[in-house]
Image (cartoon, rainbow, N blue to C red; front, top):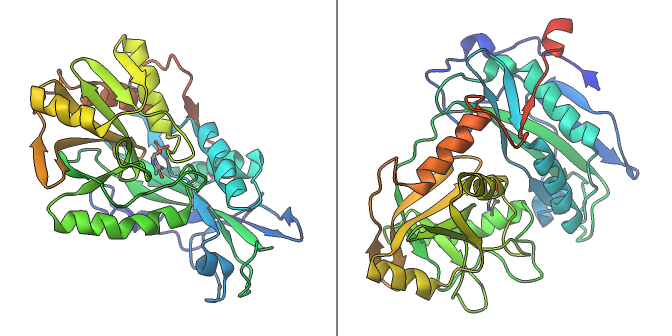
Length: 357
Ligand SMILES: *Cc1c(COP(=O)(O)O)cnc(C)c1O
């Protein structure tokens, strides 16, 4: 790895009590360029703009995919990643589907650890704090030709993140728009999947909802995901979540929730969720909770679901009664080293670069 440390670090001006998530970037980034059929040197360099033209294929044809993950700092200042090998495997599944070269373990996990180690001072400490990390691969070839590009970049950038608390939101069950289709790219973290979801989400916002529950594209009769998160439904004391598929992204948080529920002995079924069953359960009072899960906010609880013009309220459960909140706490306690990790999910980021460079 080639390491070029910043000569103008901004860390001294960073205020962990007062910063803006998503547009405050740590001092360094990782880049690696693919050309002539192979990846070049992995580089850790100062964060900043790169020279591209509007003829870059990634922005014209959308050959781009990404990952979202976090690093956490415990009370003693130790830094951990959470199940990073899951993100490594997933970015390569996304890359393959989008006809982009896969990255090596050394590039992904090695780059991740070096970057987080180097900029560990940027990771805010305390309740709900973390570093949000964005690995990505995109086509950089300068050509207006609708075909697989022959130049790509792998990069990792990161932004400090705070509080997991998000107020319960109301969500609209989609009966027209779809996020994914059979044979499509729904299982991949393709950049274009997000672009395609913004307009329907904006329409839902104009109707008084915050988010969409995506249903299957053929019939709109089954739940798939919620916004950019996987979805869980609790009816009486059983949790349901749909199986992953070509259309349902295999979320790390989803998988962790499933394992944590089993560990606690909570009844959980991975099976298709029919919209009509959820509506019927709401009407007869057995629908207890509906929530989304993903790395960014861990859990987003829903207070109401909209279906065909009707807004159906969900019960307000306390912290001790809500499976969503109980499992969220179990997960966050493991991520932040406040609880035993029986699953071996935490990965310590060794302190090397900061001391040797
Ligand atoms: C990233 C993502 C998720 C959540 O995955 P996590 O690994 O839990 O962060 C769920 N659905 C979609 C569509 C996503 O892009």
